[in-house]
Image (cartoon, rainbow, N blue to C red; front, side, top):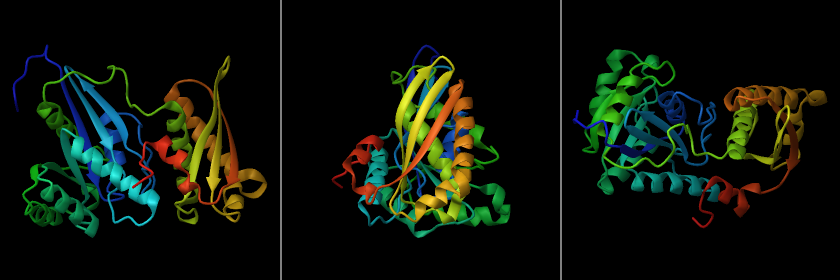
Length: 302
């Protein structure tokens, strides 16, 4: 590992790439030591590039949790993939996270080919090793490293934390000299209103799982600091009338459960009392609204 003077600042943008559900968000949360990105079993949970910030001694890392890269057809999906590819192009370093249990799927192969085509190097991070026998890992690593794009290989479990400290130490050691971009007490650059909406969206996915279509959105419509904490009002947008009763539940029971879970998380993460109020509205084709793209930092024109 390179030697460095402790008085010099070192900084790196690191794009965290991978197919959907490879565990990118869980890994970013693990490396930052905080919840900066939502996690759910549903594919394409991450919609925008969320930056988690790691500071240790004289080095700052910005880990960019990118949307999964896959073959996109809808405008919204194309915008997410374009965002991930832009972050990859502009990053100082790249990590390709591969689900060890799933192995090398078509999306992972496409990402490797893109890296090779653009002459970009990456750190290979084989994730979820706690779910796979050690005998199965070596052949998988050998197959992946046939492509001349990987500078290092790490085997980790973002869920349990196994070998993640070794990965973090390596990333800190190779960050180039450069001025920090964020204050040293920041954990993420995500605005609070968007962060709060993401927490609620996570709870919707976790409680309703496969019953709930991918196409929903949560917007924070009001954020007010009061004497007793923060009052947050949010609207959950769905595209069809039939989805509204599913989210609300009998006598509002499901919406209450989702709201309570989100409120507890937000109170803990924001370190204050949170009063959360949720409304469900039907808005057809919300994913074609340019303001949604602007809110998430996505390009509507892709």
